[in-house]
Length: 446
Image (cartoon, rainbow, N blue to C red):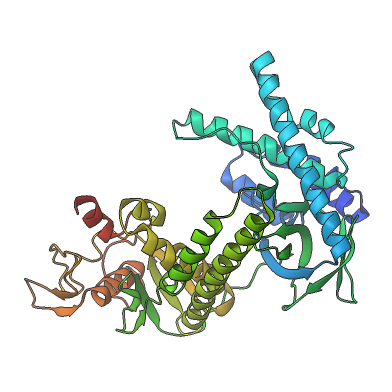
């Protein structure tokens, strides 16, 4: 009853336009059912479907999709000067709050509460909710450090930030700190109307805004919108397994291959020249600042080229297949062993995330399987044999199967994803276990 009453009260406050208190009652509802049985939680979400859309991300508030939109903004010189001044104030506020956390811990052997940090952030010169959000970030950073230390993981205490590291201003409430006008302007408190290039339509209800300044000097508006859940449907296309690699970026189970464009090779000589030129400038000088922006622009161009390729390929795949099977790769751990530069350039993780979120709206499904032995296993008979990285053709010692090693791995991935499905003669279960790709074991020994 407590959960239901709190959720109804939160809904009333939300519809009445009373902001600031609804989160308290939603949190109250969450605490009331935190230790309840799953059946009771499911019953609650079915009884109060509108309440379950108020707070996405918790157990019974999971039927709302949040989508981020990134648009380029063009402030005037006067607006840009004011925005840079706000970033400077935000940097000073972060450093002051962090210094207070350190001194408070030295005096009392504990860290200050979130409410104490919020009180300190008042009258900072920033928009009230923006300064509160910085206080929340400091508190989260400190507690994340404590959590990682408690788990025995390597962690460093939050650092003081120079001006270059303070990159964004956050506005958490639409139509209170910012507005999107019909005349194509983004109205932000204390900055006025900013020219924005809305190259795509925003679907759903806008929730938050982050104004970001990139190292290249460009300004971006990152809007988060709450979208209704997409009804699942199938595009009735064939199924496919995909093996990601470095020699070939993606090999499909039907034999199709997409070569690795190796974007960084096209830019590394120019970047090396610009970085050598930057190293000859004096630190803190105007020439060093210009050189930093030039290097940042070239890195941004490299990033945009890479993401253009990934977006186009992922769009093609989700519209051509109904089920896409991929390996659940631990890319960071693989990059730490060997071929780190090439793995980061290939951006397997970004590609997998694109496939995952685009598949929902394209009538497709993305499934991630355990990558163990996908390269060593024969897709015809299941025989396991060693496959050094320099052997590009899989020749089975048992059944005589001979095919490209990447295509063989892609067929194994598809078989694991479709195990037990109608129309599949595969056996076993496609267990989703985060693991290294098979080649990572070769890195360990090589």
